[in-house]
Image 1 (cartoon, one colour):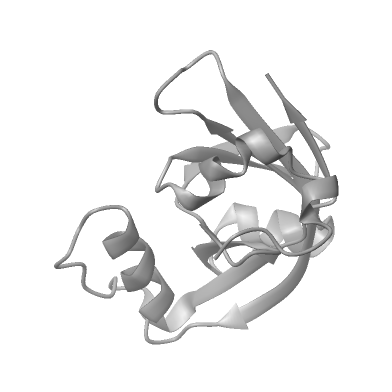
Image 2: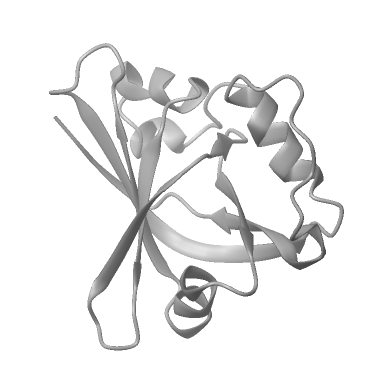
Length: 136
């Protein structure tokens, strides 16, 4: 996979490995009342974008339809004092009515027997641009 050319300008080289790991992170979106909603999320990185599985029936999806700004933080599993925060926008919503991406993420996170969820018909892939980062 690796970082796409230009991503090194946004993602510090010594933190890029966090995007390759099946590390847990927290995705933040903006609610209609302008407060922040933050939830743990599985993710995958395609070398340019972060990808998340979600449904069209939940608040996070509605938040992103109203305001596409999003932020994702990943804590280094080997050092909880080290983290990477990525800021960007929702740039695409890809239908996933069979839940294939959900299965892919389940396997990435260690469940080799992952099956599609019951809500597969409502599943989508949220695609996030990476525009800025902070780290510690």
